[in-house]
Image (cartoon, rainbow, N blue to C red; front, side, top):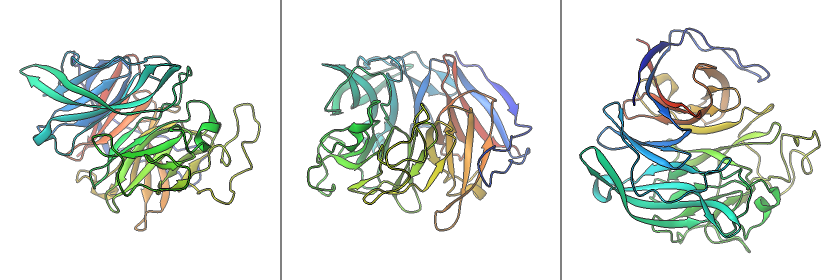
Length: 371
């Protein structure tokens, strides 16, 4: 059942231990809790008619229409809802008004444990009820294991209509450097699960791989200025990274990293090595980043092109300035400790910013201009 409250964000905190951080102006943002009572919400996308679809990690999907959450949508397949696994991201088809398709990722149970998978289905709405029909799995990680972490799992449509899928290393860094393994990667497929003809073809790589050497990508977005993919991934103890994954390139995990192991030991050979790409930006210490958006709305026009990234560890929304060339500059913490762990970040058609909070009693929070 939806509840709502109005919160004026009266102050923001200075980012500690990150060079160049600045406080946000107190008068900039209002925040409304527009729905709550969600169980660990993970992904959200907007429908053309003004509603939204939201996933809950234990395995439920709901509609949000006119400020009201629906009952769980029927037809969601079984998910391995353990640890970090479950029902994860959701993306509405770019042609939804014609095909009514939704795409969603989940930890798929199977022989050996679980792995990241993506399905598509037709969303059928009948009055206040909704169901999924013709559910088809279009991607399934080629090796399932019993670990319950690092599923990655963001879904992003490219301007050319292909689908980017992010995966994690499933808690085993060596898999990120195995080019016959879907783990620790960006995957690029067509919406029917086939491989695009222009995917990279490095020797020994699986054909659906776009890039490798990633630890656990839980944020991804298309940069509207360039049409290219941006991602944010978890490091270990430090070393969270923003990357622009390019076709056929290796982003280093666990050979290079700006973090260290949780034991305090060095990771790999250091921060750089031949054949491995450098991040656009990194955090040390880690902020545990999740959802990402590139701001392209009109409500906060001065933020156009800037990055918005949720922090799980410190429960804030990071606003990162970018210059005309896309270079990342100062970082500001918004809504710090106001709502809890920020799992997903989306920019609505009206330019407001919608957040999901990863709590057992999670919420959808809308940020808008205070004036």
